[in-house]
Image (tube, rainbow, N blue to C red; front, side, top):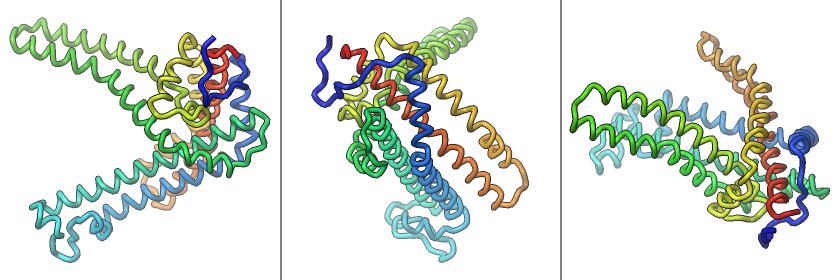
Length: 314
């Protein structure tokens, strides 16, 4: 039996496949009124920021002044353009990129904050504790930096597994092709790329499944960013198909619930409808999204407790 981490929970119990899914759905239904509000606020805030970013950058160049951009209405370039000899269009692009990066960072932090809140609240509910959503939110704030670090590390790891094989074989084949000009190498290149595409996708799915419970490890186990990834990898060992099946089922459920509004919203992009109608579709999508987004962290929480209990012999 493995030793239990000092910050880990010892009261976790094993759950069957059905119990993991059933508990996730049960806590989704019972806590939806809280989770819905949290996710809806995040969705509407980010939708408003995105809408404002597009409008300001496209029609109101005054906001670009904050990034040192050129203001056509005033007919002069900013101090930055004088110092760095940048063209007005360059400064406008820099301003847009700067605000877009800020938008992405705020979006990620808000999403992780709400995810941590759902994880903590669901774990306390499953343990029979009467914890308010406010208490869970305040606790999640203390873990959001570690969650952000773990998310960034997880993304970099999965991308490296996806791109590294292509980079190695691409450089190798390019060198061979340059040194030995032969049409045969075109066939080799095509076969190699197809094989690598399949292999990389399989490897990517495997890595994502093994790292799928790092968020509960951060929130519930108090793990750091790097430790949470190692913990998730360790806990999921020997349970790949179990974890994979639960992820697929939850994903299909989320897709089924959100498919109609999403399709309607995407279709509205190609229609000559007033901007207000597009805003209505955006709000509808945000509402549906707010309903389905808690499912994933809830399933991760139940999976984490189950895998933790199995690994440490509870």
